[in-house]
Length: 121
Image (tube, rainbow, N blue to C red):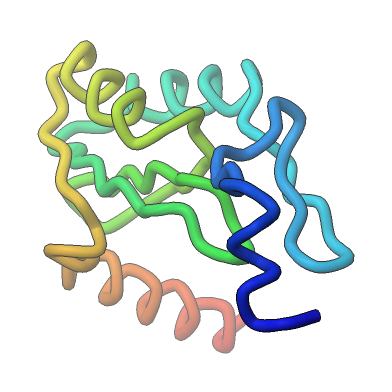
């Protein structure tokens, strides 16, 4: 294959298939209703929740990371970046692009406390 052959084939679509997308020999699961239900149920009993929208990577689809005031967190796949921001707006939760702002320090501290607690038994 010559170097120009890849341009002659026409444009490639970068949009994931409805049931997921392929990464080499692996198929990544797309978001579904269970993901949305989990996000909604997780937010209800917690306060100070913020949303961090993580972009699609070569090994995972777009995800929404929700972090509560104490650093407790959950992450689920979502249909798109636009959908994730709209979901947060609908639930009156501030949302940020994780690729720009990163994840909050309170989440890292929560993970550290959790690991220490697991070591103690």
